[in-house]
Image (cartoon, rainbow, N blue to C red; front, side, top):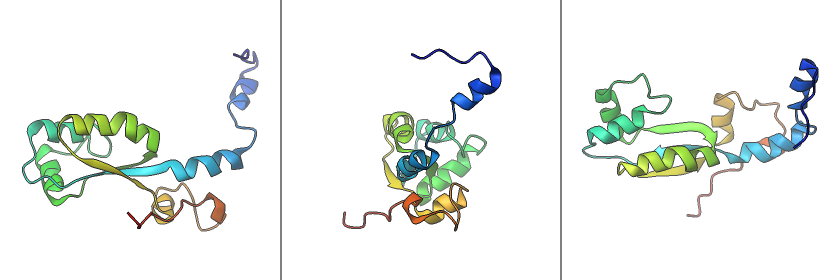
Length: 131
C-alpha cells in the first residue's frame, strides 16, 4: 500500500482518479435499480425489510404495503454490486423477489448523473429486451 501524503491538499487530490473519463465509462453501465415483485399479502417482516432502505426509511408501513401490493417498490440508482450484496439478500431473506434492471439514460438524467451533453459512450446501454 502506498504512503498517504502529509499535505492535506495532496491527500484530497490523491483520491481523484487520473483518468476520470475511464472511471465514468466503467461506472455508468453498472448503475441499476432493484425492482421488487408484486406481493398480494406482504408480511410485517417484508414491510420492515423494505423500510430499511432509502427512499422508504421515512415511509409508513401501510404505505409500503400499498406499494408492494401494487408492485411499485424500486431501489436505486445504485451500483449493481451494492444491490446484489446488500439489498437483494435482505429482501430475498424475507421472501421478497427482486430483480436488477440497468438504469436507462433517462433515469440517469433524472438522478443527475448525466445530462443531454453527456457523450454517448458515457450513456447506459439500452435495456436487454430479448429475455
